[in-house]
Image (cartoon, rainbow, N blue to C red; front, side, top):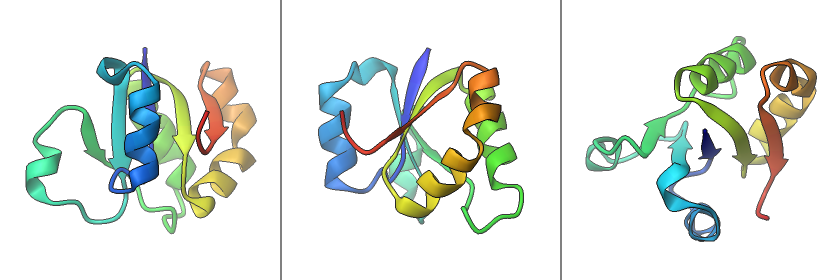
Length: 100
């Protein structure tokens, strides 16, 4: 199982990754990331929270990448994911705000 940390380009995401098992952490961001950062399997481009299908796109991504925990570091992501907590929990995916 993997853990997804959003806001990949933030210092908070990097600190949080070090606290967790780095081998099982995937960093993701919906903001533009440099191409060289996306070449690693441990960094991915996330759906934009402005998308009408955001929660379903995130759920699909989590299922495809075997993600069971999401640390949502941006408020707009957290609000949308929290609104869909029950849906994510049905698939065994936990939504966490910020750092541990």
